[in-house]
Image (cartoon, rainbow over all chains, first blue to last red):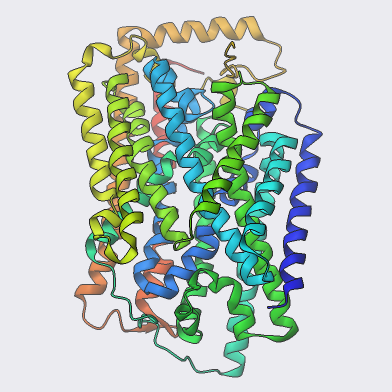
Length: 488
Length: 125
């Protein structure tokens, strides 16, 4: 691929991000602006921003790559990523907004009346955030290497630098505009090339080289256990993701939090049709891309492979721009939410502390990413979902719906989930992709129930520790806002 | 270092000048909600919202499971094509999304109705 294409696309996306970020700077002034955009972002903006932030390297590159490799088994990834939002809507969206807390640690501290729970939750949130940023940086490394031939670290450093500049400059308000822009950029960047490719293929009457049902590498199909476990991770992992949850605080009230989620579901459903189409076209017309071990680059390579020429270069530039938008938006969303958590716990919640925390939250995963190699992007993000589903999801679900949850139960449950799921991740990394049994490769099916069980049992055993203000808190979480607010 | 707790006031919008009056109205509703009678309504609201969420989630999961089962059990269905595309790809890759959207829409409508009923019961205008 023409290296100028990659560099130009990255520069254009970074510039657009910075311009929108600085535009946001003029209207974000107070601490509240910095953290959650003063809670007055309109549902359409907010939904586009949530979509922009959520659609990461795993969705933009990884899903199509996995579909190319494993066919219909991989279709569970986009379905799970979307259905996770349904679970979020059903069980978490409105009560969490009504809790009035800004971050997940704020919520657990208020709900369980315990500083220790707050610290434990903060640690888990920061771990999840860092684990989630690492695959984004791997994606950036892959994209830079494939499109420009530059060394892989250039991509990681460039993404971290742009994210630090935009977040430090503008906080959440400017990030909201940037993210909303990036959703539509990502959608266009996937939709236009694939529609063009399909049009060219249909026009020239090119016959498919392979059947859609044949795995190009001859890999065995996933078993029933793996598919179920993956779905558990994706369905329950979404509702604990820190960068997704912080978005709900920018809604004015619980009702609009629900409306926002409905729009997000629509935006995600439309978006995921396109990676699926890339995967299907890849399997039928360019299965050789799977054999070179670069299936994650399918989306980037397909336009050049099937169209070629100047048109191919232009389409490639568009997908590269979309890919960088994906790395930038997810990373900056995670950095904002991590910085919110870190700065409140360590730096007293000031604007300056937020900026310092933002730089820390971006640099640590850069170190992690440069030390580790890239696995399949959608797969490694799937593991983060499993981790979230085994730690933050039980504490949120039980905290919102069950009066009996205690601080001891929450801590024991989160620790159980973190140890089991973290252990499975480490064991999987040590054993390698070939030697890992499926119950370790996809641990969610047993780690999530284990975390729930421990949380419930320990809470029952320590039932005298149920906070005294529980009645008032449950009332606040579940009753509609005062008419003054809802009639806006 | 002192911790500053950053939470916006829940009931008052920035710039709305009617602070004291709103406060006392909110306090009186708090008091009403925390009385034994008020808690009966609150508990029944929470129960109906949870029941609704579980029913919608279960219904969606049933449909989700039914899709691959249908492909596995009906002979020839997975191999058939629809407008030139393999049927199993269309079903799993596109057909599930409308189900998700429909479930979400049903949930939001019913959840809002539950809340409206609660408002009527506690006498919010």
